[in-house]
Length: 93
Image 1 (tube, rainbow, N blue to C red):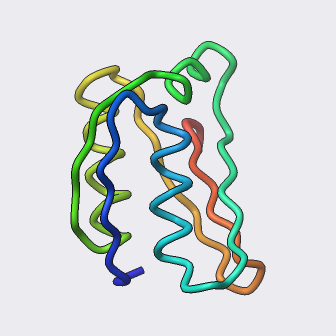
Image 2 (cartoon, rainbow, N blue to C red; image 1 turned 60 degrees about the vertical axis):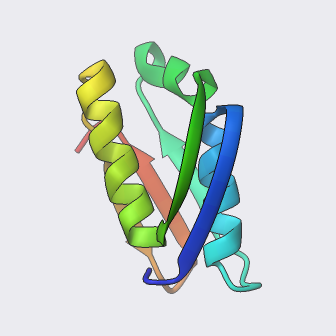
């Protein structure tokens, strides 16, 4: 969670940027990132963006979720399952 990530992406999808950040933060462990989005919100995964950031993984995720809410109005939350090494990002509760 507090592991540093550095992302310098240009014209990349949200999904790819998030996967890259998780790969850096995972420290050679196998973590899975799952998106649970309503059909009408799945478009955000393919949105192209530019992003340069050097922060902890937790800060990266928090900033990303806040930015998505501010830009699209879609409120996302995360659920982390440490034992099974899964992070779920969802638009429903």
